[in-house]
Amino acid sequence: MKKFTFLLSLLLAFVGVTASAQSLKFSDAPSDGTWASNTQWYLIRVAYTDSYHPKAAYLSTEDGYTNNNGLLLDNDVLPTTDKGLWCIVGNETDGYKFYNKGEGTTKVLGVSGWSKMYDATSTEDVAMSFDIVSSTAKSTAHCVKAHGKSDGDYWWNNGNYNSSTGCKLTQWQHANSTTATTGNAFYFIPVSDLANAEYEAKMFLGTTNVEPFRYIPSVSAACSSELATWEANKTQATEDAFVEAAKAYLGKTYYRITNCNTSRAKSVLAADATSAACVAAAEKMGNASTVWKFVPAVKEATGQYGVKLYNVNAQAYLGALVNPVQEPVTPMTSDLTQGGLYSISVNTSGTVKGFVLRDGNNGRMNLESNGGIDKWEGQQGYYNQVTWTIDVATEFEVALNTVESKSYATAYLPFGVSAVNGAKAYTAATPANGQTVMTETANFAKETGVLLVSDEAAAKAILTIGDAEGAANSSALKGTLLAKDITDAQTKYLVFGKNNANETEVGFFEPSTTVTSIPANRAFFADAEGSAIALNFGNVTAVNNVVAGNANVNAPIFDLTGRRVVKAVKGSLYIQNGKKYIVK
Image (cartoon, rainbow, N blue to C red; front, side):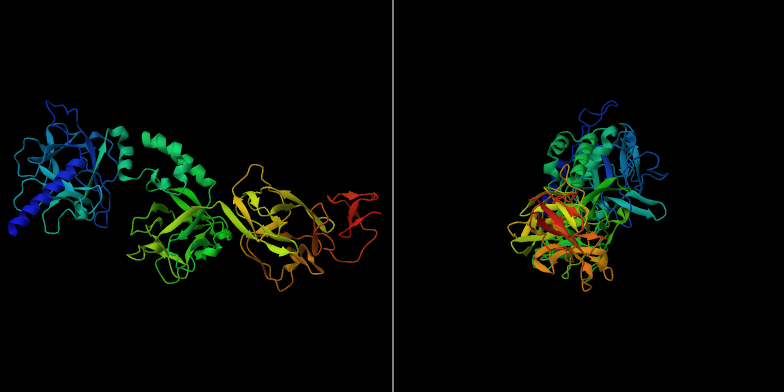
């Protein structure tokens, strides 16, 4: 049994080295002071940081990366000279040596308590030949140990030697020092030369600015040409072209975010001006507070993009996620700089299909049972509540209210509408003489007050979200995105409804004192004269007797377009005292 275990251990060790040999490119030995033609250069960087190893430092022999004792690991600035470039020469049998391009072909790296460059022919009792295996603590990282040691494994280690000066490259032989030790993990980043090293490092580490955008739904499809160009030729210039295309697309695209835990009563992310919380799935298509935009923003410390989650109806940004509690209150803010910087990635936890949203503190967005959101990593059986679907918001539904043979509703929305189905949209002219002329429009801009009218008494109108060139943006109808408190101010507003004197007719009327608020996304007249306004559609419907009061035979006369006339013509239709009549 012991023999089998020993042979198995040898096999596993051999497999580890072989796997690494397949992922790293080894160079032929330099000859006569010249590097081999197949030399592959690497940047060597710390793979894991924590409070003991605070910097993702690079290994280099240039000033600023060393002290009098040897090589430090406390500088995370990309090296700017050849002294930051390394190649690996050797084989599994004899071990591998590390040469430094800036130090020349006669020196190799030696590692003991401290590490520094030694003459390649040196016989000092310092490890200068090494074995390389894959790290089990950090994906794509490697671990390096002294070759040929009989008294244990001496692994390269990011050693914290002095709290005031930082870390160093050392070796650690201990039962706790293995391929699973985070401090033993190093990235070997292949580069072609110093000129391209910065961008090649970004590609290896997955920190190009392609990554923050490509997984946001529909961005890759919309920017497929720029993405294909980058895939074929990965340079800073092609990345910049893709990023600009992605930013332009996001600038005109709206999204809805829904939790994957469908058993929750409230699962669609929404917000008001002060806090974010989810609403019921039934509200998803008809609640403007469920509509978001992803606003690109750069994290200054890294230069990498993230997105701010902007609720278009609340006109506020989602803040950083709060710690998990039963009834969390994650704040909203109108200040872009105070909004949390989020990343979006594909979920890989469990089998739930969807996306992960993380704030700038790496907190993962989680849905609590009351609809509030906070941060939690999730666990087996609960990954659905920390995973979200993200859909492009292309339509918005407005419920219509039936009056006689038609149905109506006002709308005041935070996004443009490029088409209206199930109803007609009308803007309103400035009221005059108790009436407003209504003008049909096929589309309208954001924050434009409109009246929706269905001649077929449809239950709802379906609006296509999007900005249309030349869309109507002028209407005397004002509006509110969020519910508006009108307590003790009812006389300042005229809201849409039935005529109390004749409930078959509609118009805009002063609300009763029992009405203390105007619902979100409704249009109204503000500070208009009189207590009622009739609707002039240019025909005989929905106008008669809307404005009640005593008739005045000397009142001005208007045609159906609202223009005042001096003399009425026999047989024509006119409006006087808010009523239509035909001159006989």
